[in-house]
Amino acid sequence: VRPVPRLDLPLALDRAAATPLHAQLAEALRRAVLDGHLPAGARLPSTRQAATEVGLARATVLAAYEQLAGEGYLEPRHGAGTFVSDHPSPVGAAPAPPRRAPHDDGAAPAGSGARPVDLRPGRPDTRRLVDPAWRAAWRGAASRVSSWEPPPLGLPALREQVAAHLRAARGVPASAEDVVITAGADEGLALVAHALALRDAVVEDPGYPSARRTLRRLGVALHPLPVDEHGLVVDALPEPGAAGAGVGAVLVTPSHQYPLGGVLPLARRLELLAWARARGAVVVEDDYDSEFRYGAAPLPALAGLDGDRVVHLGTLSKVLTPWLRTGYLLVPPALREAFAAVRRDLGAPVSGVQQQALATHLASGSLRRHVARTRRDCAHRRAHLLRALAAQPHLRAAETSAGLHSVVVLPGGADAADVVRRVGERGYLLADLADYAVQRRDLPPAVVLGYADASLADLSGAVAALAAACADRRPRVSTATTPTATARPSSTSAVQPRSRSRPGG
Ligand SMILES: Cc1ncc(COP(=O)(O)O)c(C=O)c1O
Image 1 (cartoon, protein in one colour):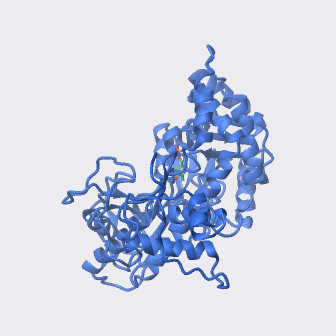
Image 2 (image 1 turned 60 degrees about the vertical axis):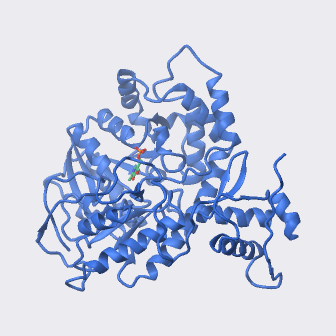
Image 3 (image 1 turned 180 degrees about the vertical axis):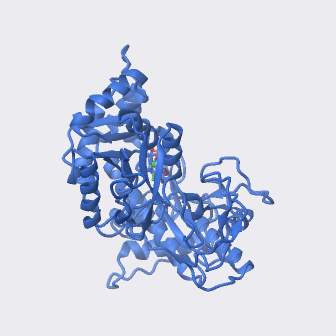
């Protein structure tokens, strides 16, 4: 029998204070971790035992544990208990040596013996994904094997669950027949291109490089359109007769422009839909991370504004994990048969076992709970990152109220590719904003940093490394957005390989 661990903390909780008790307990635990009173790897008592020990409600202890797990100080391990994470370090402290890459891609930066911490965007928080409901869903699915192939448009049970999720989370009046199960957003986009026999598409600049690669590979000509702090500049859509005026589709990220973060205002949404309607074009709404908002509720999805004109492109990569390679499309009724025909020819890309497991998982309410938990955890990490950045006079976080990454603007004149390389040498992989651009030469020097799968120590370390890399190279000019035509060598960042030189800031 394992001994019951004790917190054994000098606790001075003030029940009359404005700070809630769970926050006071979290602070005491945080201090105990930082000063070594609770060493790395130590097992904490269960919430029930701790509640008895410190004389608080179990829910109060649970809230404190959850907060610290979100901040990376504690690590819940299923069936084993809650443990102190390795080497947490406070904001502003000397960066701890990076302890692991969240996902090792083998790309060790030059000059670094340790494995780098990969903070390039695109990785969700999967720490709490595997719980009893997840295991039960997969066990059940694995034991129900059919001798048929999964249906071309997806398992009815999963299509129904996705429709219910979209109705609840995005206010889209979706039904199961509108949903097509895909192998992720890129595969969904390829299906759109096939079904519409797409030849031309408007894409955002800067935008999602992977979507551009998918479309290019399928022979689709791209018309990049600028985005500003509110998202796609709809006024720049081509006039009749201009190049690109006959495009079949406009690919947008209206909820949270990727990567800059703008939320497309309602007026622009309506203008975009009117433009598409007038030209018989389809709007492809990439709604990749709308579940992660830290303030105002998201605007209604475009698909909710015009269900005949919009193909809604969804993914489980952010709310669950890209490891699944699963997503979905919401297809207007008039286009449904074209999509079904492509699927019949090319086959259904997602295994029946997986679709069954996900249908059960969604039906159990686990996805909703998981999103609520990870949203809370990510909000802590985001707040920590913003505090760390605010302490650095030469770094500025671009406005973000949503998502799983942040754009960090460097001092004017900084060479972002060089900064990314130097930060890489210090053990942290970041992405250069310029790698998301198609034609834009006027973007400020900036890096893109994913925080969803990072520990607080990693975030502190990356910000310190970023500040040091910028300080190594003092800015030559002070304005952040001055466009120049100076060529610089291509980036070492792996977001999108580049073959051409780009402007410096
Ligand atoms: C803009 C955007 N769309 C979609 C996705 C998800 O793609 P997938 O479902 O192919 O993993 C991502 C992932 O990073 C993204 O950044």
